[in-house]
Image (tube, rainbow, N blue to C red):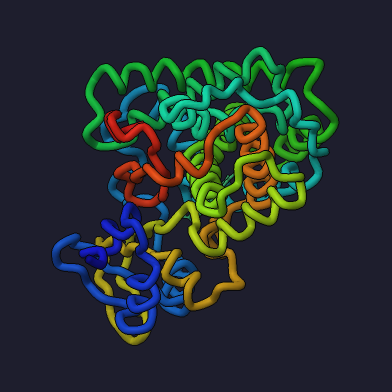
Length: 366
Ligand code: HEM
């Protein structure tokens, strides 16, 4: 059975024929069941992304209500990913320059110790990308684990269904993340590129609180998408019968192929502050447009749509590829049985990320 709609497609065993037909036959339509506009062709998605009225957050709810008031809401509202302010563009440019100039560390000792049973692998998928990102940023190894669990606690409170206990944990995690990043900005061991980033931010009138929040934002952005890329690469390795850790080049090629044929992020959204016209079709203010990146990628296989495009495009693409390749090799070296894992998995019920779940007996929520 093909998926019933683009959200169901994210967790479908093989959604790609459906996506190809969607981009070809219904590049822009209103889905009455989801109550969303759906854009799936490269042209329609590009028009939406380029429109100044198409915002990354609903104008009436810049931060999810459940997180307000409190430290988790304050952190969320500061992320460049989550706002279209003039500061966004300035800070995004500086963050990108930092990411591009920070020397890549040796990640050999940077990984969490994997347990290779299904539940252990599920946990490793979400921990490893944050450990790698923390190592990349030069954070001391003794805080990598705390960063990863704090990010997990923060993410767990984002769904509107999160209960009071989850939200409280997210507030405490956000406090710790913000304090840790601020302390690191002032620490003697912060490296040359981070110092330059601080100076550039000071010159651009960007405060240290905002910068610290966005360093936590880099950890946050790497987590779910990184887990999904690593998980899908593991599934592909398993389908290929890979039982040994591949050499670095082969691991990178496997990750590149995963990005092409089973990408980690399938959707993103835009919220209309004003009426817009796309492909001659008027879409009223207040509507939400689902941008099916995975469908655009089938129409344009050489464009890495899974990393977004234009103003909010992902600045972490190269890191994501490198970290997934390293994490996969480490997991296979530890003895994970990729063919057995690939033979029995489903997907977490997430709206945007295609993230395998190998411990099928478990609650599917992260
Ligand atoms: C497989 C891994 C990753 C995927 C598939 C991915 C995908 C994406 C996508 C689709 C967006 C744009 C969202 C939108 O426009 O609505 C985005 C934004 C972003 N990503 Fe990534 N990402 C990944 C890893 C990373 C990593 C490792 C970092 C850390 C450096 C990172 C940092 C960011 C940031 C800061 C933004 C916000 C940019 C902005 O709003 O201007 N991402 N990512």
